[in-house]
Image (cartoon, rainbow over all chains, first blue to last red):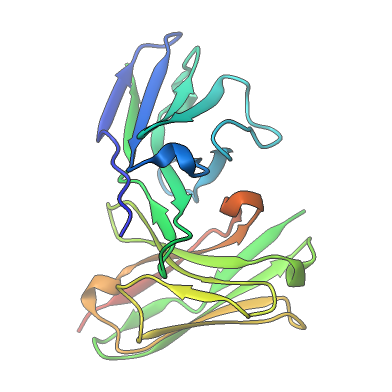
Length: 109
Length: 118
């Protein structure tokens, strides 16, 4: 089955840029989506189809996807961005196609 | 406003059964595929199951295949997850999620906790 690997944690100072990677075999050929989850809350979609933002999501959140790595970039990080982030793809070649990454805890120093 | 409200969680013994429901409102339910996603305590997100808008296409994670059954009632704007032969490792918060374009999950419910313990 398809596996998505994320770093367990990323630390960043306020105002700096956080980059969260999501590794998968030829992930560049798939649409990647990113979710933010704060403690005790449901996940929120922050980037879909590699680099698009849902309405209401700040422009500070952006995404890219190429080769074997997709990346979520959070610019001008704020304290409120501290959360867990998950990547997700749909592996159409599988009979269990929904796949989430392992998750990354972003800590704002 | 899109709303998804899960219910039916609770404490159940190993080997027992439980049926989760997700009530949808604020959108044309019959036009969207829907999914169940779970999260064990302190762990990451795990996709569980998906059902297409007309129930023609259904998928399950290997971890639940043969034990869980997803269904929907478009007339009642409701999604269901019948869970049988429950195990301790099924303990999790279960979320229902609407599937948007490119298979992204754009709206989520608040979740319902299922605890499997003797």
